Length: 519
Image 1 (cartoon, one colour):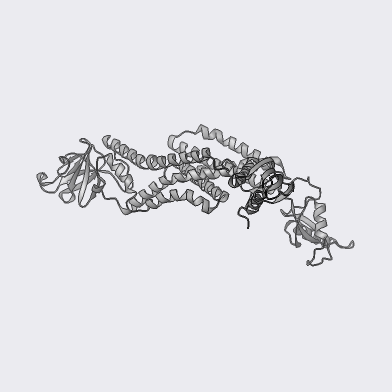
Image 2 (tube, one colour; image 1 turned 180 degrees about the vertical axis):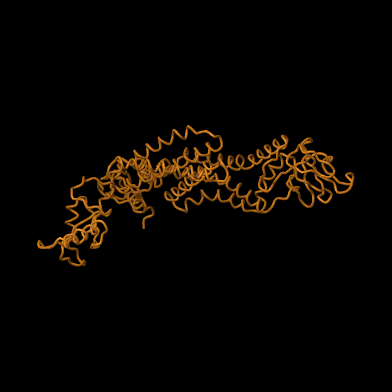
């Protein structure tokens, strides 16, 4: 089987090859390996040691979009010449347009004729039976017909086929939808590939409308106002969906088709709004939905890259991304986020015990940050799908390399370590203001009043002086030692748990005493 037997586009090209007999044989072998047929060859067969110019009429078959497909075909032919070091020129190239039409489908059904002397009751039963046969298919013969007109469909219904039972009664035809057409419809049918492209555009419009609906509801719930940008993009999306649907040849009302497409967009917008309203956390539906759509786009780019190449050629691109993902499943890898978070409090990780489950969650987050690198091979997949990176050019490789480095830095440093440090700074700022900071992957800060067990002078304190009259921020404990952060001194105190009784309070402004908090 040819190596590149799967293809989306076909292009006929006229090329001229100047070379010896062996070079012509090499070129024809390369075409055969790719499954590209030679339609014609002009010129005498050269002698083994004599150069000749031979013109080949070939058909290039390759995957990818029809956008810029002509340039993609030319570059793919030139790749063969570059690999084999041939003196070859592409004189002319043009894409082959072959798209099967989706003609109307018909069912054949048996039709009986009543005698002229039949009574009224018999005629009524015949009308009812004919209605059921036309609408419900109660008398279908089992033959499915594809034809543009009812006349052609009736001719195909009555034509005997080998191996099929002969029918003595007459036959008629009905549409698959259950309607009977008596007039000749216009000969207008959509191509199958064009229908798939139109449905793909409508799907994109529906997903965009769902995102806009979620954004509208998020802004409405959080800020109690409307997002005018999303509200303006919604009718534009509906108009584009209706215009896309109108490009599909059909036999119904064009106004109805456009209305259905616009209704699909509005329904998707309502679905996104309901999703944003029902999520537990307000204002997060649109970002989460955008992240899901971005992940789908990246996965599709990787699929296109594998389809353009093969797993053997894609593996060297994906292995550098899988190596850091493998490190992500090592024990303690996710604690790097906790180190950056606690560094804002000037506290070491060894002083705070992180549960295993939260270590695993932090590892998943850091792994997801490293996974941003997959956008680089995904971009390469889209570039190859649209025939922008057919040849192994330095500029295209440079773009992918720069994007890879930028994504690794942004993912690991920006969204990973630096984001954890920023979360720690926000927690310190909240503690300075007397508020309780939000938790961070197993670190749950809370304000407590320390009540010494016994005499205060006998309580060992590492890092400062313990004042039972003030509230401290508890960051966690490890090995029987609790870490209390002093908001006034901006320092952490390490105190044995057995020497203290900690009473939770609401804020840092709570007055504490020897026996606990006081109002």
